[in-house]
Structure formats: structure tokens, C-alpha cells
Length: 280
View 1 (cartoon, one colour):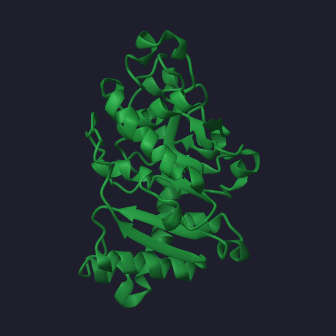
View 2: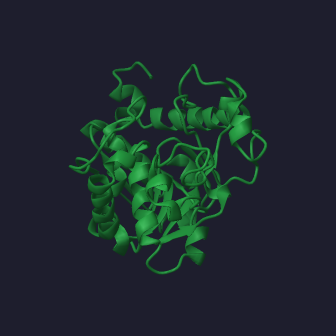
View 3: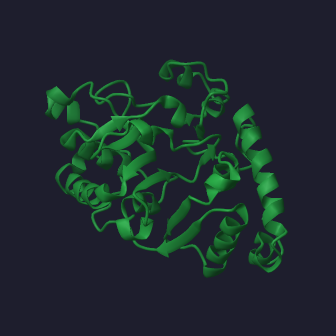
């Protein structure tokens, strides 16, 4: 939330509505988030507890929970704005993310091509078996679900399309909700490609552990200064102590420490009060 605020002028924050869906956020944490959003100057904030799609299928739950499917539970009434920019929690925002809306065609969802699995049936592992079952889909672009630009009027259509994909194409689901979304995108052809700088993977952590990322990525693994958003995909998250301290991780942690200090100044609603004084 604070990195989103840093990318906007104070007057622009007043036009932004923050919306959060959660499975298990406590009421006290929800109150903390709401108060923090007000202090940052956002126009409105709302959080709702909800369950994922009944058809949700977890093929890979190594470090991902069923909450990943909540991205499909936003509704036009809850968003209460013409457009939604959806973001995963493991991101650092560096700039204004509204730019992709300027070129977004009506009735299309904006998404960035996945850096590790750029194409269906390619060297990655997205949508296993799809290219063999439907050869004409081989080499089609495959998109990352971590950041999406969505007209609110399409939210219901996306949810029903993903539900159908989960029921009809379950054998092709490996990357959970992301594969389900891409199945719908392939059938509907309603995706609008967004520039890579708006969902740039942080690659340095993987380079610290081996050379495979250099074979997969088609760019240097160093930090990209032009990235409007850095996405910390994978198991090792920047808030965990065992995460390699790359340049982007250091930037994230510096920002995180400033945010924690800000939250702790909130007194009864601060995170130290919520955690029983542990400061974790």
C-alpha cells in the first residue's frame, strides 16, 4: 500500500480506492489496514472476507495457498470504480500503474507476458498438454496473473470463464489460478498485452541459487531501473530472512522498515499492538 502511494502525487491518491479480499485477516488487522490507507491519503478503502471459487483446483501448493483464487472474486459493486488494477501481495510498486489503461481496448483485460513461461508449449511449464491437444494454440503468448488491468464490467465474465476452464481443462492446470486464467484468455482472446516493465520479475534471487534462470530469462538478471513494478515470484520472498539480499530485495526491505515504523506510530492500531508487542 505504501509503495503504491509513493508512486502517486498526494492529490492523485484521493482518486484511488483500495480494495482487499481475504480469507483469514483478523478484524484488528483489517482496522489497521483501513487506518493506514487513510493516513496515506487514499480516497477509500474496503476489505471483505470471502471464499475462493468452489471449482478452485490446487495442482501446486508448495508455497501457494487457495487464497490465490481470490483474484477472481472481485465484483463491480465491491470495486465501485470503472476499472480495477489487481496486484499480488509480493510486489513493490515504483511508479504509476494506470498508464496501461490508456491503450486498453474496450472489453479486454491487460496482462504482462510471463517471463518464465512466455509461450504455451514452449520451454516453460504453463498449461501442460494444451499444445499437444490443440496444436493451433502452441506458441501462443502465456500471461502472468500477478498484475492485471481489468474493466470492472468484465469481472463477472472473467469469473465465469475461469470456472468453466477449471471444469473443462482441469488436466491442463499446473500453475493453479494462472493456468485457469490463461485457458480462458486463449478461448476468449480478450487479452491486451502490457509492457514488461509493469510486471518485471526480480531475478537476482534465483541467480544466487544457480544458473537456470540465466537460461530461462531473456534479459540480464540485474535490477531493472525502468521497472514500474517489481514482482518477487517464487518461494523466497523479500520479507523472509532466508531470502538472498539482492539489490531489489534491499530496496524492498528499506521500504518495508519505513512502513513498519509508520505503522507502529499508529498506537493501538499499530502492528506491535496487534502482535502483542512482539513487533513481528
